[in-house]
Structures are given as structure tokens and as C-alpha cells.
Length: 343
Image 1 (spheres, rainbow, N blue to C red):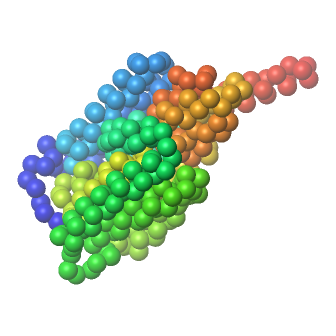
Image 2 (image 1 turned 180 degrees about the horizontal axis):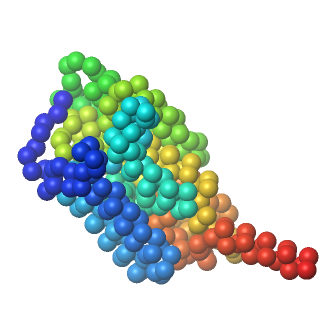
Image 3 (image 1 turned 45 degrees about the vertical axis):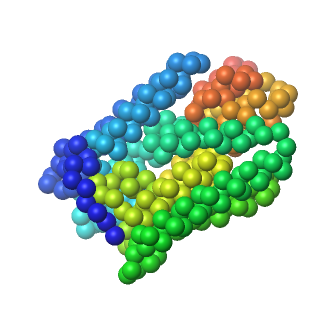
């Protein structure tokens, strides 16, 4: 069920059409320059200047893709639709896949860089994560756990009440994919709150989420997610339910959606296997826990970095000697050293 909202976007049609198709280059160009600015800020700036640059890019991206341009950012659905059009309408196929190409390409060098620097959903979750940080300061583990369950119960009541109010009456699953994903996220939180060590196990669920998302898209289901209510040019009730679930889950566990279920995040986590730039700590870990305490994604543990969860936010770079690692330059230097020894 959708409701058209006039003037929801300042620009509600393509700015630069390609060969008369639906394709418009403006969102792709905007994404390219936002990622370029992000890379400069991440690699060249230090300390507070880096975080100011990151927040600036995130706010610009939120304006561009929520308020200004009409195009949705669902790169996985676009990729699936593009594969169905290859050979039948290649120009339209390119229009669907071009956003995926830009974001995934940067992911092969910087991993989940898009998540930490450009994605508005990440920005909103970070903002509400301040509440989560307050809960973590509670001294007794049992108190922290039951405070989390109390908050999660309140979120569940709100989400299920809203889902009941806006339930569709025709095709339950096809019209409620975003809501189903949101409710699945809340279910995951019940298990993670029970035992902290299950956090790492449930982070793998995002790959199954990605597979299901692609399968539904390839089958022709127009899947929607929590971001669709923000990036699209119409309000979808299922996406609204999903968005409430995602933001509510972020009150309980920091960046819950990005950790456990985001299909786009899972895709970039796969790309991170090839990433040349990574966060590393060249010094011996003293297990002080400072870096882990500042990571919103829970990607850092004493002596270990979960690169599939790292979103390159850079918050850990000011602690314990963490820094950027360039695998390519290090491999080149190692190769040059071997050549010199042989000579």
C-alpha cells in the first residue's frame, strides 16, 4: 500500500536522461563525488577534523538522497533487475546496475566505506546509539541485560501495533518484506541480549539476508526495506514499519541493522575481502579495551578486528595506535625487498 506525497523530493524526475530511458546520471555522479570526498577525509585528515568531515559528508548525502534527488539507493534490487534485463534492454539494465557498480567498486578498495561515510541509515543509527551507550555504562551485567530487554519489549510493542494498523489486505508477504525483515531483527536482539558471545554468530545472518533479498528480487518481487521510505518518492507502509524497527533496534544494540541484517552491508562485507585499505594495529595489543569501547559496530575485540563489520568510521584510529593499512603498498614494498636481496 503506497501513498504518493507531492513534492516529497525537490527533484522528482531524472535530471540527465540517457537515450530516453529511465536512467539519470545525477545520483550516480553525486555518489561518486561523495565517496571521493569521503576517501580524502578518511585518509588525509586526522582526529576531530576527520570526524567533522565524515559528519559533513553524511549530512550532505542525507539531503541529496532523501530530500533532493528522486532515485532510490537499493543497489541490490537494481542489480537483480538489471540481470533480468540484460540482452533485452541493455540501456535500462545499465540504469539499474550503475549505482551498484559505483558502490561495490569502492568496496573492493575500502570495504564497507559507503556504510560509515555516506549511508544516511548509518548516520541515524549512530545518533540514536547514544542511548545504547548509556545502557552499556551500567555497572552490573544483569542490570544491563534487563534494561535491554525492557527497551526491546517497548520497541516490539510499538512496531507490532503499527504493523497491525497498516497491515495490507491482499498479498501479506510480498507487501510486507521490509516489515518482516524488521521483525526478524527484533527477534535476533532477544538472543543477542541473552548472551553477548552470540553477537559474532548472528553477524553472519546478514549473508543469508543478502541471499534471500537477491532471490526475491530475481523472482520479480519488488522488495522494499527500511530505507525505501526515505530514499523513494512515495511512502510505503511496510518500509515505515521496517524503519521504526531498525531505529528502535538501534536503541537496544548499537547499529543493530548494519550488524545483523543489512543486505547491502553484507554485499560490501564480501567486497571487503578484497579491500586494500584496512584498519590495523601494528602494536602489540595490551587488551585495554579502549578501541572496542568506541566502535559502534562491535568490530573490535582485544587482539582482533572483524573486517566484515568495520565501516571505516575512523573512531578507533585515535586509540591504541590503530591506523590505516595499505596492503597493496606493503606487498609492493615486500616484493621490492626480495628483488634487492636477490640482486
